[in-house]
Amino acid sequence: LKDTAFIELNREGVLPTVYSPQRPIQRWRRHRLFGVDSSLVRLPDSEELGQAFGWKESSNQKGATGTRYPEGRLSVVYDLLNRIGHDVRLEPSTLGEVALAIQQLEHLQPADIEINDRGFSGYVYFAMVLQRGAHFIGRCSKGSFLAAQEMVRLDRARQSKVVWLFAPADQKAECRRLGLPLKMTVRFVSVRLPTGELEVLATSLLEEALYPTEEFLTVYHWRWGHETFYLMLKGRLELENFSGRTLEAVRQDVQAAVLLTNLESVLSAP
Image 1 (cartoon, rainbow, N blue to C red):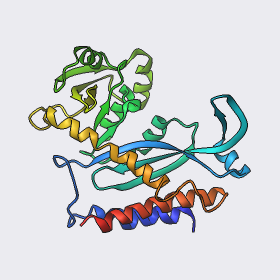
Image 2 (cartoon, rainbow, N blue to C red; image 1 turned 135 degrees about the vertical axis):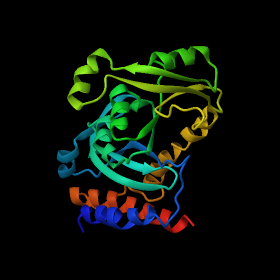
Image 3 (cartoon, rainbow, N blue to C red; image 1 turned 180 degrees about the vertical axis):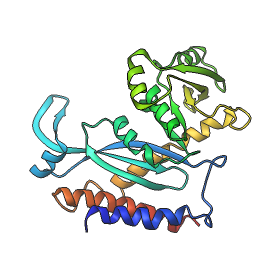
């Protein structure tokens, strides 16, 4: 079977079953919660895979070892509360995870909420999520938006602030090309992790009454389900122990593994 057979089984069989109007699903305040993230995958050592995905040079504490292996980037649009993989892409690891995630935004529906780690928290990416009619919750790095930097400096949890964000000068041309706005309203929320560290989240969910600040710590923690999903693929299902050394075998194994996890989620949900 080609890998497209497993893709069609997932899209035509599993997803309509999961999201049937007659079947209740897990939501947060009536929204579906999605993660879009990637994980690097070590592929079998074959010339065909090396040409398709590129080679990764092995190294250790002493430097280069003189060996190499093909490496891919696996990116999945994942329903965090219902444990369902929607879209699965395996591309060369040289393709950045943000660029790959942008290609997958088409799978978001209006009112969906995408929850991302700090690597995705940029103006253009946020604007593209909003362009889909969806919402975002993204963790900010300490050197990102000025409002986030100010919250980190104050070091106070459970703070909420709505501000205007303007497209950076070096991104305005790209925004115009993509039909994105040059400014947008964003809410910044500060949360205290169990470790005592302060994190700042940027979100398009502006209304405090509808989306209380105190809930964002729990909501963002649900993103961890995406990490455990990759852990299950690589650990319990031994994804990197591929059944073949050809491009078709590798793509087939990836799509079949995600289909299997989706079927498990459907069967175990009750």
